[in-house]
Image (cartoon, one colour):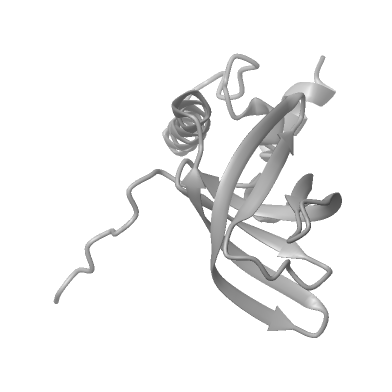
Length: 151
């Protein structure tokens, strides 16, 4: 049996355990006009993201975006790696071409904390949900919700 080698360079942060996260993404069009559109963030890594749009994506070689995650606004340049369309819904893979080292590290830390939490949950360790977790703002695991309701 052969195993496929993982080609991804960065750890992916799956968003919300099967529930997707709404975000605002600001695009620049060909005429340098900025427009914001709601999107659904499906997963995120320091190297790219998968989003769902309810409008046709911009036709541009490069996307200048601002990804708003909670109180964080992350400027990113990227290119569309792939598009899947079903009806009027577009699932898009975006590969980042420019992201600051600080923001890439921030996203990596979020993804690593998220995976660490998954391991702690699978080992049935106590106090798995912690507000110090860098992925806390995007997390909707049942453990987080139960902590919220127990406050």
